Image (cartoon, rainbow, N blue to C red; front, side, top):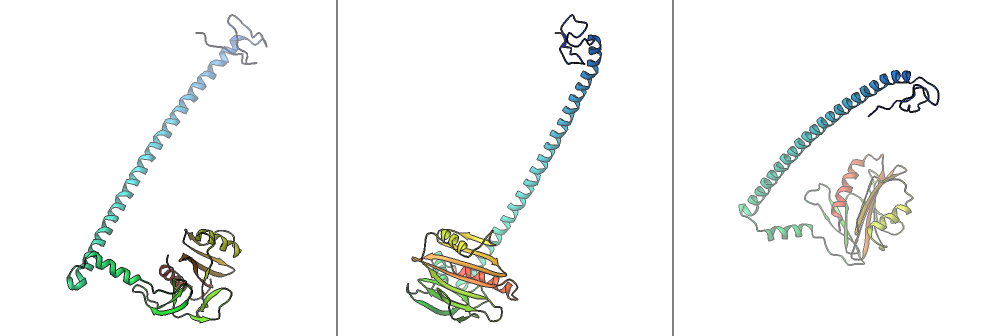
Length: 272
């Protein structure tokens, strides 16, 4: 099959038998002589392109292999750590069982009953707001006072003292040394806790993302800083009542780290 020839002056394809381009008059021989070097350059460029493509493919294959090796190493390390944690947990459990009952083993029903007794909260009437006895949870250094409201119990550090309430608050407490304020109250449920958090966010005039924000159907908690004041609020819907506590303090307070610990412990004690 004849190789096509194009006029190097006007680009028109040269028909068989012509000595000159029938459009511009360019010599066919000149077009043929100029076309040969162009064809060689194109072949050379195609060869270079294939070589570069092959090198890129080889580099990608090496990277994929290295990534697989790294992932395998990480997986092995995680499995090893998990096995060590399981072994440590088993050792602790064996030690605990051997120490209880003067070395005798307790059955699982006894252990479950002890856990229930340790976490059981005092009952309160649905309408009463009662300050109950001071307690010191086994794993918490600070003494906490339990405040019963609408069948729920909110615990707060016993070092805080009660002051006059404001608005719809049930109790208001302050820490004279660090300036922290704790308020406890209740609201009428207006949907799920997730929806109530959205309403609270709008009423507080907040914009942007809060520092902490989590919610489900029965509880929400939120932490944000506004005009130099840190506010942490947790609300739990239970027994048809939405009970909350709110902890506020200055972001520059000397007791900031202590207040952050209080909040963590209060959240753990106030659950749904």
